Image 1 (tube, rainbow over the protein chains, first blue to last red):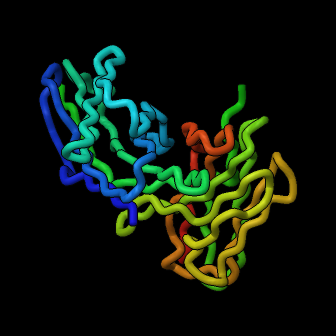
Image 2 (cartoon, each protein chain N blue to C red; image 1 turned 180 degrees about the vertical axis):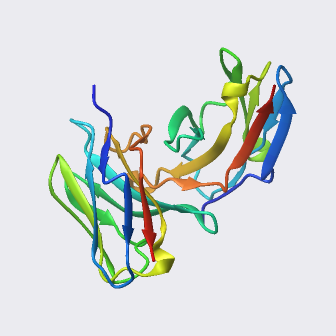
Amino acid sequence: AQKVTQAQTEISVVEKEDVTLDCVYETRDTTYYLFWYKQPPSGELVFLIRRNSFDEQNEISGRYSWNFQKSTSSFNFTITASQVVDSAVYFCALSEAFLGAQKLVFGQGTRLTINP
Amino acid sequence: DAGVIQSPRHEVTEMGQEVTLRCKPISGHDYLFWYRQTMMRGLELLIYFNNNVPIDDSGMPEDRFSAKMPNASFSTLKIQPSEPRDSAVYFCASSAGTGSHNEQFFGPGTRLTVL
């Protein structure tokens, strides 16, 4: 069965610090997809990134970067030079390719607070 | 372009009443999902549709919950009768592309409170 673990329930840092959000997943599939979503205080879920299991290249988008390591089943998310607007709950999610399934399994989320 | 539209945004009802949540997916998307978010259980997939057909409803908690998608631009999630433990935020999401695991676009959610 799929499982996504975000061990950090809450993180609080001071603005401009770098912060890494951890995500560990379990799957029996060789083909799967990993996602990160952001849920700001307003409540909506915002897509950040999708990565498939065959692409282990790290990705950088502005202050955001993602480190995918199949060897440790991890897909960690780093925010560099954090800003107050980064305060949100961040979810890691997994979907498996079996039968073209589109089911997303979410982790419990990490609440990130950036203090001015 | 309009995103996923959900109504109502907030619903307060009394135990035993019927509740209907509505969703309009993004035009052209062929997948529609209903999720529930609670503090205890996090984000759970309840049911999803492909081309208006229910594909997997294994997440629907019990027979009190039902979902329909009569056409490509409208879906409902109904709870009858509602119970206090159904209080949660219900999200609708849509995505495009068969088997490609494209990102899901979420609506703003409906916050349901059952008294």
